[in-house]
Amino acid sequence: MKKAYRKTATIRAEQFDGSDAMVEKYHIEYDGAYILPFRIKTPDGWLGIKASDWISTGVNGEHWAIADDVFKKTYAELPVIPKDVAERIITEHSLNDLIPSGGIYRAMIQTVVYGYQKGDIGDWIVNHSDVFARAWLDGYQVEGHK
Image 1 (cartoon, helix red, strand yellow):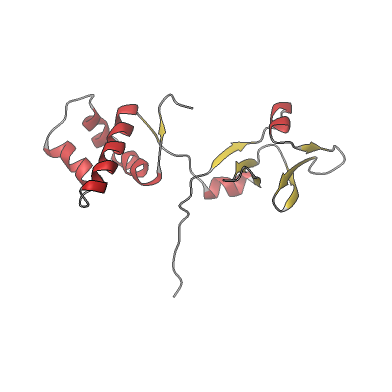
Image 2 (image 1 turned 45 degrees about the horizontal axis):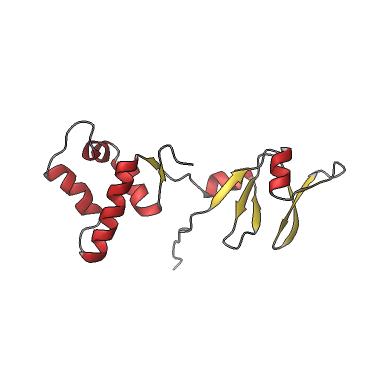
């Protein structure tokens, strides 16, 4: 029986726009004679890349080119959450290390059981429960941070 797997690694990637700044940043070679005039050095050698492809940087600083259509089918941007919600996730993850039962369930149920007021963290969690769950499981970006 085949088993299903999911990717668990978070990657950093930037969409290549063909600008001089990106050519310099990623040490991309340019040769107008080729169908793919841009080439990027990868661990597998030089690879053709075009504007709209994605450049991923590996854990050792190496670069990989990913075609735009493949990238969009494979990766989703991490959810963006408010700073106070991120702090709640950090706190609850720490508590989860000390108290093994509960985790995300406890974080969400406490919000509902103990109540919340419009505009507070609990209100955001209840009204964005899918985003909260994805952030808890996959990681997140904090609003306003780059």
